Length: 204
Ligand SMILES: [Zn+2]
Image 1: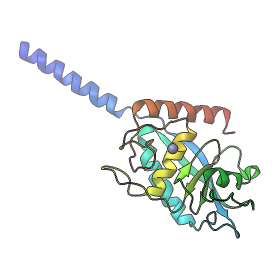
Image 2 (image 1 turned 120 degrees about the vertical axis):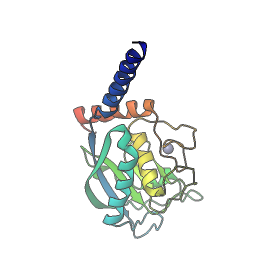
Image 3 (image 1 turned 30 degrees about the horizontal axis):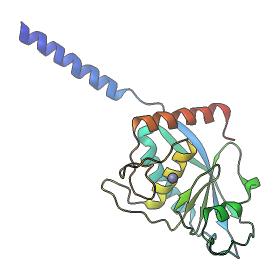
């Protein structure tokens, strides 16, 4: 009697847990406009990334973000002519100079804007749109991390665009300068909340 009750209890626990594991998480899709920054005068800015490489980057971005139920859809790829602003001496690869050289009036309303440039000090940055990623990104190896550093950095910067802050855990996506790709539940919840707001109220 006791045994069969136990068995029923155990089976219902197994049944319920398999049910909860199968509850599909609603996928939120966000549009991304990609800009390939061009500059005839500043080689740091002149990027050469191809459309096929951009698609490969976003396969990695979406692999990383899938557990959060967020998908980034590239809705456009275009060239962006950088402004000819002379970098201040000693700050040639500064993110501030890079951002200054990007024409903000070419950002696309209704999409997250992501600019690829050639090379700069950091691998990427986001402090208000656009997110900027270096096409020659390298990052430190961590166990279980990403073998696609450009995709990993793009995923990281898009995390900032969805309100996430840095977290000092080598394996996580929001660790700066590493290869980790994990998101914790709190980050997924916060990112989904922001993504839903963007869906409802539009991406500025
Ligand atoms: Zn960061």
